[in-house]
View 1 (spheres, helix red, strand yellow):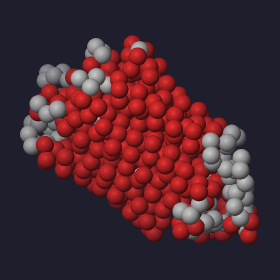
View 2 (cartoon, helix red, strand yellow; view 1 turned 180 degrees about the horizontal axis):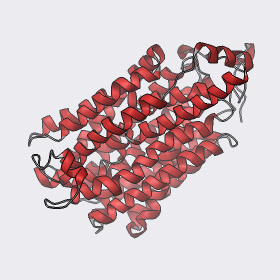
View 3 (tube, one colour; view 1 turned 135 degrees about the horizontal axis):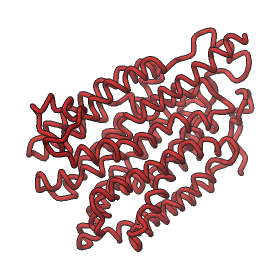
View 4 (cartoon, one colour; view 1 turned 90 degrees about the vertical axis):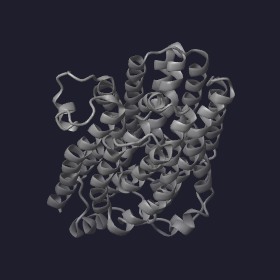
Length: 441
């Protein structure tokens, strides 16, 4: 029994490491959190409006809405490892195809819309579902460490990869750029080469690491866990979960977060460039945002093991509202706003992944997570289009949109105060009491 426990501990740590690396090079970072650096260069190259350029990322969000329930089904049906490893090369191929974007906005939209479909297994659910079976009492910390990969990628990729490549010029001695441009046969530097470089790294870095690290419990390990604590599968069915008031509160709260959070991330570089910041300064700000996200992923994961998680979400949502106001009134302190926004993005999916197990158990974890994750991106699609549109209608000024975003984040914070006590505490064994209504906090 001790040998099985020791091996399970090692497998849990390796799986968490694999999830961290996979998420660092996954679509959450590459197709969402770092796209802000591409918007202005694409706008200049093709002469399209900012609203038109940004609409590609609205399509990404809506494709996530469509794909999320399917991802939940695939992960529950085939297990996270097979789904993730199949998706990585497809995701890399979809990124590489963006390099060849012609001066046709509909092809541009199509190429970006394919990305979340090709990367269906690589949204956080796939990795978090792999991590969850290995932990119980330290679940929040484990999820935080896995999700830290999104912060790690958001911190390092803009400053050390995307920004230098976009700014690169022919003649500079850079072996990586030489590799992805096939020794100079393809055009050098710019946003296209940045995306192609990321595609190469996804394939040659992410896939081998994830293939080695990501583990699923064996039959012996599952049996041992059933004997020692809660069964691997316990809790409410999806039909039972969706009848719970908490399900609808979470869905509405994360819809409102989606309307604001992702749109702010995609537009923070353009809005600060409108305020007089240079492209280099906005990429440094993106690194600050990534650091805030990285810190929150780990810190929030630890905190929610000890503090009621909805209260944590309320706090970071209010911080996000403050970031919106600071962006509008004091753009010179953009680094503070980026840090607060990083805390918000860093906390939200840590909290969601944690709350699903605490309120509904494991039985329908993938489907519940997939639906709420999809609802979040339904809101994201609206926000990504609406924020630059409000700017356009306001005389190319983001302020009105930022004030609306602040109000929405406050509403989301208030919603979280209505969440009741957990149905399943750490170490809880499913029993007849599992079906009783939760008490108010």
